Length: 246
Image (cartoon, rainbow, N blue to C red; front, side, top):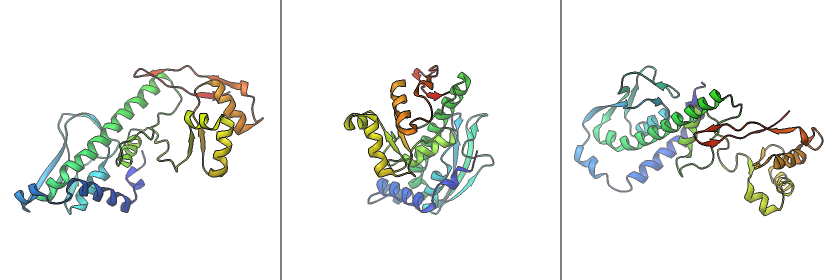
């Protein structure tokens, strides 16, 4: 797996963390005043098995608070956490007030990211075991303010992020098509604003829809009759679907 942390732009990551801290402490940190600034060390443990993900977010929280983190050897994003529990992952050293200030934020990001990576990895493995040749991908149905964390978790779990936001690509769904009147009209309108460099994707609910999309995009490059539906395997009760050309 590629080094995922390199995907994160440092200033954007810092801005995200500062926003989290501002939300959590909009005025006074009363608990921090109680414990003071004595130097202490906290240990991060994994208490359940799964895929570790979100190290950069955990690190960024304590970097912002000027605490030091020492990660254990092998504690890397995408690591399958196996062995006797709990598993020590890192030590955080700094003023106790700062450690407690960042603790919940850092754990929230790490736990959510790891949970998504674990779930994604499990679905990818199930798809492989069924012999399905499609791609397991995420959606834009992310938690507001947490999209970067959640999309990162998909990558750590070997799934695909699909589009990051509305500006990443054009995805025409049923509501777009109904509003425009047809797939052809929706695609033609999208082309006028997206140009040639932005990918246009159409969500199809039937093989007939896929045939129409083929004609709109490819004209006579191949016959629409060459489409055929693949067997639709089930993953956790939901059908995986793909339409391919032959």
